[in-house]
Length: 162
Image (tube, rainbow, N blue to C red):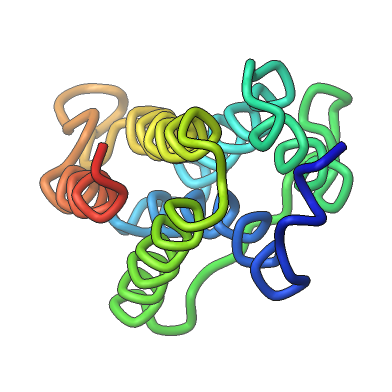
C-alpha cells in the first residue's frame, strides 16, 4: 500500500489524529451533560469506524488505524471521552490542524483521496453535532444543532474547502 510512505511520521500523525480531534471539538462546541456527550462520542466513533468502508484508500487506512488505537465501537468497546482543558483554545487548535491537514493533502495526496478525507471529517462533525439535542428538558424543546455547534462545523468546512 502506497498511502503511508508518502508521509513523514509527523504528517501521518496529523492525518490520523485529526478525526478524533474533530470528534472532541464537535462534542465540546456546546456544553452538554454527560449523557449527551456519550451519545455524541458514540456517533463520532461510529462515523470514524464507517470510514473503513470508504472508497478512498487513504480514508480506509486512517479509519482502521484510529479504530485499532481507540477501540471498535461496533464491538461494544466504549470510547474514552476526552475534554479540552480550555475549550476555546482546543477548538482553535483543531481548526488550525485541519488547515494544516488540508494543505498537506493538497501537496501530497491524490485529489480524490484528499477530497474523500475532507468530506469524511465534515460527515464526522455532522454526525457528532446532530447526535443529541442540547437545552431540552425531559426531551422537550432544545436544539438538535446549536449555533455554537453549527459555527464549529461551518468553520471546519470553510478551512477544508468543503
